Amino acid sequence: MNTPQVPAGADTGSPRIEGIDVPKVSAWIAAHTDITAPLTFKLIAGGRSNMTFTVTDAAGRRFVLRRPPLGKLLPSAHDMAREHRLMSALAGTGVPVPRMVGLCQDPSVNERDFYVMHFLDGVVVRSVEVGRTLSEAVRTRMSHELIKTLCDLHRIDIDAVGLGNLAKREGYIERQLKRWSGQWEQSKTREIPLIDQVRDTLSSRQPTPSRPTIAHGDYRLSNCMMDPGGPVVGVLDWELCTLGEPMADLGGLLGYWHDPNDPRQGGDPETTGLPGFLTQDQMAGLYADAMGVELATVDYYRAFAQWRLACIGEGVYARYLGGQQGSQDEAINLDAYKASIPRRVEGAARLLGLIS
Image (cartoon, rainbow, N blue to C red; front, side, top):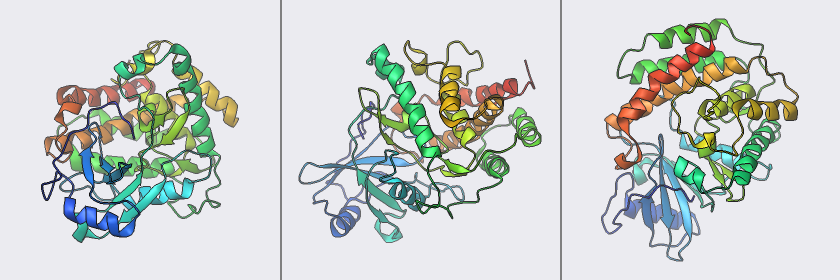
C-alpha cells in the first residue's frame, strides 16, 4: 500500500523491531508462503488502530503485514483472523480488496496473530496536502467511485460468499451501542457526560432497520487505496466489519466527509472540502439513487457515526498515551486528536437536536 506518510524505518539486523520479531516472523513467512527471505520491515506511520508494516523480500517484491497494537487489548478488538477471512471471502466479488498471502495464529512466532497480503499501488488521500495534488475532475470521480464501491459491497449476497455466520444479522444498532459504550468505559481518559445522553437518544429513536448487509464499519476515503485517476483500487481496514445496517456505513462515510457547507463538522481534515469533491448531501443522494432507499433517517445515522467515532477515538487516544501504537508520534497531533473527540459528541448531539 502506497501511503503518503513517511514510514518509520527499522534496522532488520536487530533481532526485534517494534512489533515484529524479525527472525521468527521471517522464518514463518518463508515457510508458509512463496515470499523469499531475507525480509525487511518498515512500520507505516499514521495507523490509528492495528499496526501495518511494508515487507520487502529478497526479490524486491513488496507485501503488507498487519498485527494488533502493542500491549493490553480490549476484548473482541483487533481480530486479525476476522480481517483475513473477510478479505479472502470478498476476493472476486467486484469489491476491490488486497489479495491475501497468509495468516499466522501461532503466538510463539510474534505474540499476536498477524496476516500478510499483497501490496497495492495507489494513493491514500489522508491529508489536504495529498488532496491538493489531485485535479478537480479526479476529486469528483473519486467521490462517485467511493459511493459505487460502497453500493457494490452492500449488494453482495452474504451467504453466497460464505459470511452468513460472521455475526448476528439483526439488532445492529443495539449491538453497536452496547459494544462502544462498554469500550468507552474501559478506555476513557476523562468524563464527557453528553456521550451517555447521545447514546440513550440513539437507543430510543432507532429507525426501522434496512435489510442486513455486509457493513464495513469504517468505510471512508482514507481507508481506501485509490487509483490516481479516481477508481478504488482496494478497500482496507476491515477490523470493524460485521453484518448489519448499510445506512450506518453511509453515515460513517459522511461522518468523516468534511463539507464546508455543513456547520456540523466533527473536526476532520478539510481534504474533502477541496473543490471537486462532492458535498455530503450529494454523496448521500448518489447512494439513495443507486440503492433505491429513502434518506429520511440519514441524520440519525450521521449522529450515530459521530458518537461511535468519539468512542473509538478515545480508545485510540488512550493507546497512544500508553505507547501501544509504536514509534509513530509524528503521525498524530495528540492535543488536536483529544480535542476532536468531544467535538464529535457535540456534533452528534446537534444532529439529534439535543443542543443547538
